[in-house]
View 1 (cartoon, rainbow, N blue to C red):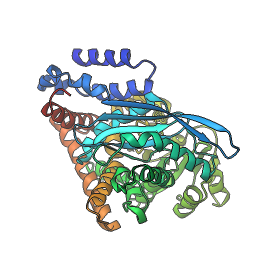
View 2 (cartoon, helix red, strand yellow):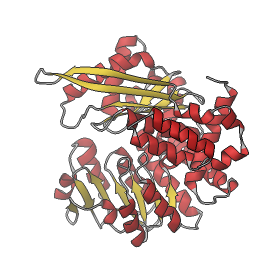
View 3 (cartoon, one colour):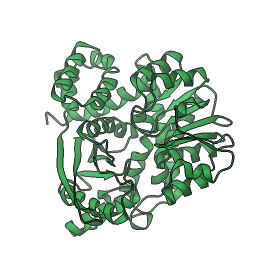
Length: 445
């Protein structure tokens, strides 16, 4: 890295000890920025790097709640309001035992650039809790969400900070959170949360948007080589909303999704994943991979190894951070993978990314490929602000336009800085410049 970048990175390590995921996210962006600083020394003079790495506000709070047995439970809640140069803080809430400040900061840092690339007027933020909704009753989840919002509400607002869902936070949790916000504030402020139910302010396509957008971006990358998804084998890690709707869009575009996964293992279905069955198992019954296999002749559950052992043309990691490592990348390359698009946030380790880039594999970083989710959240905010409701077809068309624009912006920026086809460099530089210029315009704040 450039000297200025190295110094800024050393400060990140010193000021944020033990936050490995955050360090990784910062390093990945900094590795792209040398040419930008040489071309625009004003960013160094104004300490944009240092300001960008320090969140505007970090909120940590206690979340007490009572389980069904009457026992008092304590979790920790977080909201990192990272950067508001482009608009109100925008980013999801994650409920998962792995959540700690370093995870939230890594997600928030990524969100800054993702939101900038989307072209929507939104800043970056992220939050969550180490609460695990899995295995909890509806009433326990409701009580937790109400306690969580009882503290968080004072920091939110449609012009201040607008959370959405993430791992462990779906429409059910958003409903409980919104209900408590409304109860406390005495305001029906629809735009304060996104991912809401369609009947009470939500947007059509929001549930599908991240998965759809990831596949649309992958298809745009393939188009630069005169190819598309039609007839391709696709492997998708995960089985939440992102993975399910990535499978749906890939299937619509003529691909065959042959594998998906959850924490119990991965399922191989050579005939093509039965999408309706998968939705029923995961979205209705909240079941496990085994439940799919029990009801789908010809499919099999694998509980050891990696989903990336399955030969595929297009890999879509849609589960969690650092799930695709160096060994997985070698296996994918040996099996002839032609494109990788990140549906999750930073699911590819630095070592795996290096191998894909050295091999010339088309690679879409999450801050570009999965920007469709937050972009559609911003569309939901537009509808809430105008008291309007759009059709599925119109909203999906807007999403497709946004993903084409994100791809074009990343590709053009990579070309401008002498790295044609490098979507990592293109995404990092394009996102950085947009945010950095806004920060310069607004003074030292």
